[in-house]
Length: 267
Image 1 (cartoon, rainbow, N blue to C red):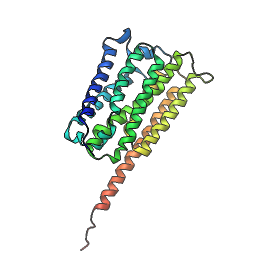
Image 2: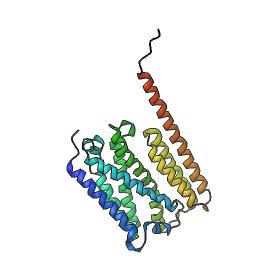
Image 3: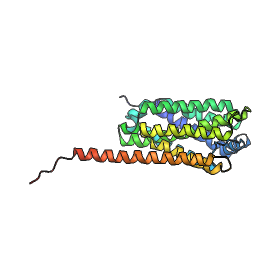
Image 4: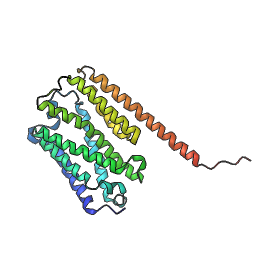
């Protein structure tokens, strides 16, 4: 496999800086006089989590910074995974920054379009780099697979929340179903996706992000009928599935090591 082109490495860094600066301006200025969280809180969205949950962006940006830094190193330039990502991260980061502008100026259908780009590029990245267990090196697993698993997990949640805001802005509140019924249905769908990601791909970090979001929904939506209970049940189910996957993986590695150990002669 050829080395990662220098143009992609440089573009990754530039796009990352653009994304972080735009998100920073959204809070420090803030853009259009309102913070990102204030706009979210202005909608009666029962899928929205508590404000502290959005601190996960700090984790995501730190993980993506590690990815960008890794792509500058000799192992990163030789990484098959980084090479396979190609220009997808650049497209994703630009869409992330543009989303901020649309969101702060109330252009919610446009934010939905950008969210679809975010989700689409992250799904494409996940398919291109494969599952964590097939990572060529430990560095690839930590600096490529893990950052994008966390990012994809959060964008999966954000896509649902963004769609809810867009429909509310357009005047549709989910009829004939109640907002609570929609929220429970969406939590169930997200839980199913999270379970599949754990069982089929071993993406425990993805499920961890969903658990974080579901707990935040339970905390904020205490007055929404059955939503806290549903969110807590979903978080518990994903935690059990993730723990089972971890234990199965540990047992599998132990069994592999044992099978590779030469038999001891009996004298």
